[in-house]
Amino acid sequence: MASPKMGNCPRCKKLYLKIRDICEECYQKQETEFQAVSGYLREHKGSTLQEVSEATEVSIAQIRQFILSGRIMLVQFPNLTYPCEICGTEIRKGRTCSSCTETAKQLADNLNKTVDEKKSYLRVMSERI
Ligand SMILES: [Zn+2]
Ligand SMILES: [Zn+2]
Image: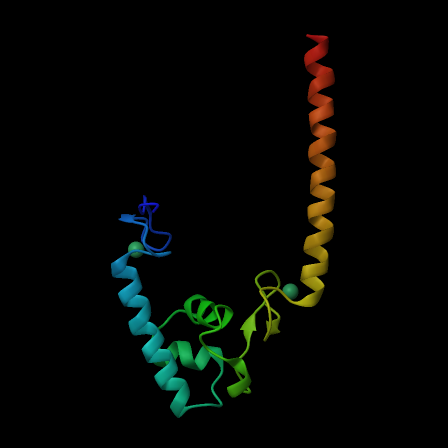
């Protein structure tokens, strides 16, 4: 059996024993936040993300993560949308809107090309020296 390793918590950067994605303290905090958000949504099904965040004092990024991890089902909340990671367009599925997903893919392709070009340029330069 593999024993859990030490690592830095992605939320608070503290060193912790990696038995879950985040440290115990952050996990507890996240659970409290989840209870607040889901409790609020139960009473206010027509809320927007902004309203939920303001009422519960849970960050939009955190609520968004609850949605992305499937803990909050958007299908029950008609007005709940969250911003695309890149352009901020309101979406209800995935991390980025469809046009950004497409653009990001193209950018990644171009970036790979640029890196290759740089590498060959550097190789040529170092051969000259
Ligand atoms: Zn933590
Ligand atoms: Zn977008």
